[in-house]
Image 1: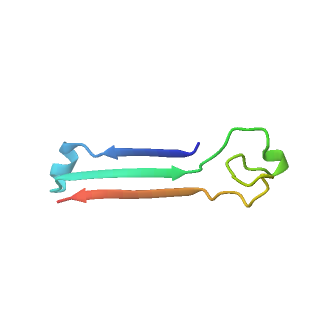
Image 2: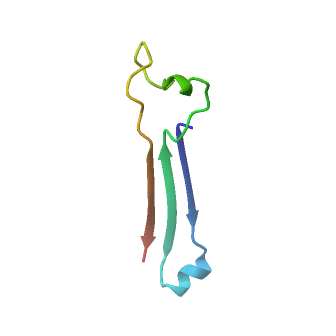
Image 3: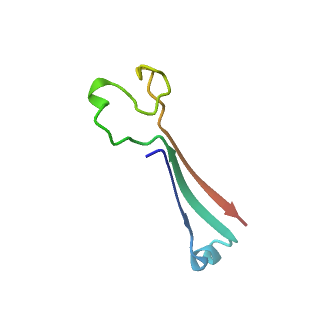
Length: 69
């Protein structure tokens, strides 16, 4: 899975209780996992090197929130 982003906007009923105009929570990820049969050889299929034995790509996960008052 190369990229994944998921978010949730809080309902207006809950926002009114906290005097907020808008609130959103999100999680995004990059290079989360790969489905293949070359992992046993230590090879990452996404690497552009000719022999495929370059250092594996990093997994990145971001979590955040957006709030407007």
